[in-house]
Image 1 (tube, rainbow, N blue to C red):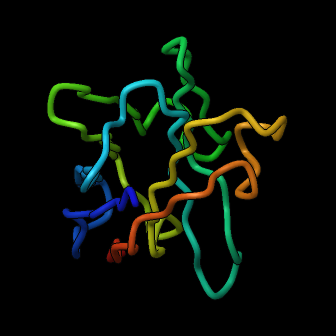
Image 2: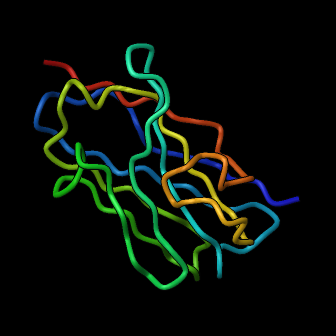
Length: 125
């Protein structure tokens, strides 16, 4: 069974940058639909970014222009580069993957069946 293991995250000041990583164990990211979601007590779960098989990337309005999702198939890793971080970006971030298209939209968590363990990102004001 494929597993996703996350790394990165931590505490950064307002305006800082972080890179999150998510790699597969016992599997390949090649051909997968990939995404990042985040969860906070105030906002619940939110879509952050998605990367389709075609290479097309999608972002939520709140992170557009500040975050970049990318993949390295050779390393079986998906990244989320976050710049100009704001206190409202504070959340637990999860990567997600799906190898089949179940007809769901890229920003719907139900479209993804495999999830990382989550990593805390805290942005201090």
